[in-house]
Length: 258
Length: 316
Image 1 (cartoon, rainbow over the protein chains, first blue to last red):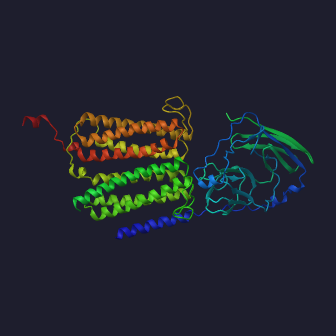
Image 2: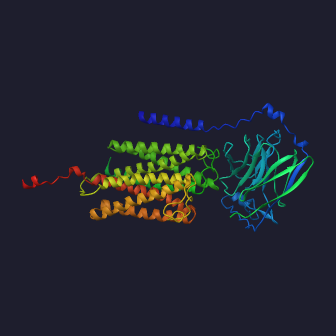
């Protein structure tokens, strides 16, 4: 019996060790340096803007219908078929392209908004499918569905996490301390669910809708590298110079994946 | 322990070993369906013992329930062996099996909590096969055949079957680890064709994933070579020994099935069923090879025990 007691004790220690090690620390918010405060730019004072369209140069395959049968609750939430959002093209316009300032704002710092960005689970889908958030801005992850989801963050420059949200209305707050384009979110219970967020140190980003349009407003004058990202088609970028109170229009054109 | 009780102990051990091969399949389904993180917490699932079995949770939590059942049965086996088995080494195997299944559970929990790190995931697969080996050994050791057999089969030339079968079993185990590494580094389709690699015998370029994938293919060749060698030896030199012939035939059948499933896994672009059957097939092949290893060691005489003929002795 002595051997059994020793063994049970050792197993119990291992279990406790595993549970203790599983505690994950949230990333510490970056403390702002004096230099960053001195270079603080208020977007309300920006006078330049870059806008335009993202086009798809080709014939897009029809979006695949999603099979919801693995969860009867998801089936009940959709009377009409649900389709994949991976590649959506509307009259030649590319939907869900993330357009942002990639280079040109390094000399400035920006205050993060007090309002959180919300990533919701609605109708067994993530809303939004593509979005943006600022570094250290709160991300409010909320389950609006009467079924459970997990929200797994597949990041490379920020800590990954995987949270369960079993109840409707369940919320979690997360923050990302490092810029990263893009962070993917997945639900492993419902494998068709995915979302992408671009984490940036400034608020100059835009996501195209059905009209393919984007707008980066209130920019300080300067030379910028603007990048358009799409989850299936990769990235395209252009250099644009805007002066004080100047607006420029550019167009990105993506071709079908090889 | 009475002979009736012995028979039932043996049957229970066989049943548990078969359940474990099934558990390897169910566990393989979790990875094949990408459901490993569908339950973020452990040991509970969404804070409960029984969450809704929807989507990926069906596979992940289903795997946990099956594993827990195997764990409980292993406790029963260990207790039964401890109380009713006269041979100390067999009792120790029972304790080791219990330790292995507990360790396996902890590894499974850790791999979920740490978001499937490769080292822990591969260790989880490796421990599963070690656990299976312990159960197969217990099943063999408690069998009437093992108890009745004695070293009686003679070998003449060439490497001993005991050495060949032991080497084959070790290589098969290493091959299962390579397979697990391939799965958990997303290298399964790094080489998209089969049986060639990018249309060649050897890939013309390598990345980390191609290296892992190709290592598994080379490992398969090594394993196949050993199995064919062993089966040929058994059928040529010991054609009347059913104690060796039948497991050798099973081992050859397992090899053929494994290669077929490997081909289908690649051709189907990692279809869930052929891929998972290939994982379970690896466990079955390991079990067959270990059985043959144990029986060769039980029935084949050591060559030192065979009297050596020399001319001086013959003249006398």
